[in-house]
Length: 515
Image (cartoon, rainbow, N blue to C red; front, side, top):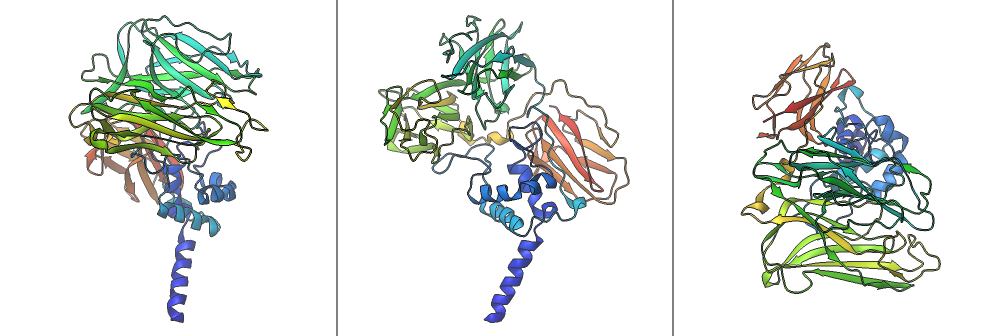
């Protein structure tokens, strides 16, 4: 028996010591951390290279061990979402064991090449960019809510397929809601600090930015093409929120839109509304209070709908929030559950599969607020009674949904295969180290050529969101061929990156696949 335990100890120790950055760990950080933690990204520091991670290893260990990082608030019972950042049990164990064993680097020449990101933007250049004039926050005793009406200067109808908000000053931009004002009737309002929504119900919400959010990318390949129409002469209307403590600090946020080509057909219009909302709750001091909301207020839904995304919202006293649907026959459809609300990590969570909401259903939302002194996020000491309001020190209970009329088969399509972005203004010049031709490439694939002699290599193809789509592994040839497929399935048209570790040096090149 003693020999069995000794063998097990040696085997376990070998597994722990054998884990290295270049061998098992780098790819986990690329997939689950680097999409926020890269130069110019939303994270406060990069976690792309070994030295980046080694410098903050102890903090990473604590955050991973306590399931604080990577941040992914939804938990069971929730639907399956796109871009889930949670670590699997195996990934978590790998990272923690690697940290415990002194986070060895391994052989740098064997490190998989990292994903490539556009600095300051995930999606890169688009078809339309609007930017607010430089604005100085007026938030002293109250939060500052202001609105900007910006001309789109479109002379023909266009349909949005992706929108990305780039905060001019991420330290003070709490949220940005992006609307399309088709009639150009909204006006800029920066005086009273209380402009929290458009004046007309005809001004349509497209999406937005909150801490931790990702760009809105609508599925844009057959058989599911979704979008929001922008009419000629329309304005882009931005609702900005700057919190208390930001007085006098400057911001100049911009929004980048990616459109479908003019004349694109079969694009289905997405509707975005705060369907689940409660304005009338009261949160007494020193109490934990439950709040609920339903939609419709009376009766049930009149027709079938497909749900694309969900965005729950609370403020500092929030502890838990969730939403589900009750279908005909009383079956339930879980949508989202956030057991530990984090004001600093909010998002429009996109369902991986459109969620069918059949006629005769009713949506329900539930939430819990902790207005006691034990809540470390409570803005008042001692606690005070709090109601619905615009300021961060007030509270909200609202859940936005993005939805559209249902069509047969909607719930069967994997949307992770159908999201790409715009292709405008991309430099395709060869960088001298990697040649790729033809570029743009089509269904016939693309040839990749390296100039330097190759002793060791590792080449990965990433999409524009930093997700690996194909790996060549180690090779010694100067030329490669990629057939434009991932796991045997043709990838959608869009932006991709060749990222290579050649003889221990990282190089990359941007390529395009077109229809």
